[in-house]
Image (cartoon, rainbow, N blue to C red; front, side, top):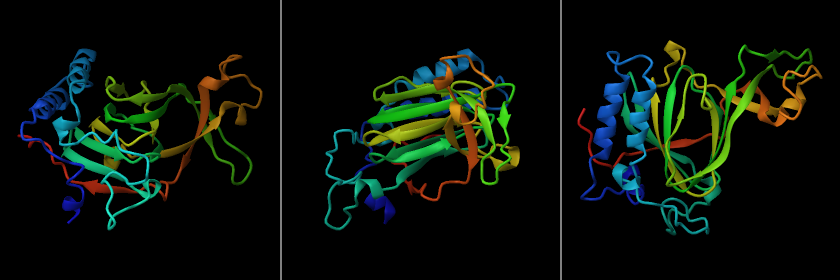
Length: 264
């Protein structure tokens, strides 16, 4: 029944190209144990160059970026299923989930947010397939700079440097984050209905120390204490991050992948 509800969103064209198969094959070649670990910059460049060519139709999506602004949501208007846009969840679509890499999509209604979170020890490639998305991302300052508050209820924070703060609109080149650079901690806010195709390598695995942790960011001035860790005029490029519980209002529903079948 769920698949019937989302069929309008995940619509496969009869003549869909095999770009997604080529992407899977290259990921397998790049991220398997026999490959260079970590992958070389040349291997990652080849991967994101291929990802740059992927569009909505290649993964069974129709372009929702022209949707009107009357709150009809991702699935179009129906007297039976009308839901205010701001009440709609993000749809998560699993394309491939394996030991060495994951391929997946996130489909956002307008104003939906994936809060600030990290990707420990991971390389992540992201491509906005349609629509506009605000991306804000940080990397940790090394060596670690930590502030522990003596006041009950005040968070322990760690200093991070702002890496990305911009709106990304399709078609836009693939972005890449690495374990220690490129904006490993990021948050997404949908400016319009949009979809993002992600490759995560290796995938989250709590037993291996790759647990997804959520954060809240604070302006640099909130915990600076006048000790001038960063230079004058650079304060806006830094923030203090505090660990928070997984947000209770973060709700994702599963979607069924309706693109071309992948031969594994």
